Image 1 (tube, rainbow, N blue to C red):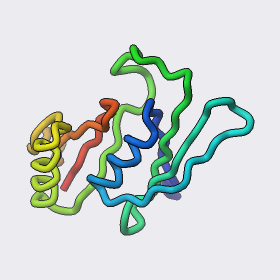
Image 2: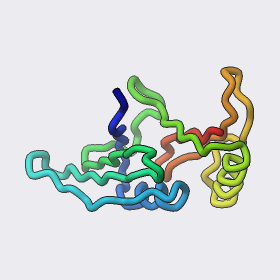
Image 3: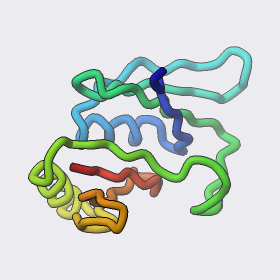
Length: 127
């Protein structure tokens, strides 16, 4: 078994797709507009080197004041393969203003940093 994709809600589909393209070199698929659910639009992004897919989804019902933490998935972790790669991407994100926490060793043994998508969704980058 393996996960085929994960899905994330976002209020700005194009900006979210650009984030994944800029920081991870992801390919971005065409927008899908649902005929059955009015206003639902999604795009699949594909991570390099068979790193999987992420479905970015949006709809007019998403609230600006949604709680930052709620029941359900909290974040995704993307391994970059080395501490040097984590440091380099973390620095790029610090410069761009989307670094939440600098690289560090966690108590559970990961070397990671946390960056934020434009809508604030956390993405862990790990070695």
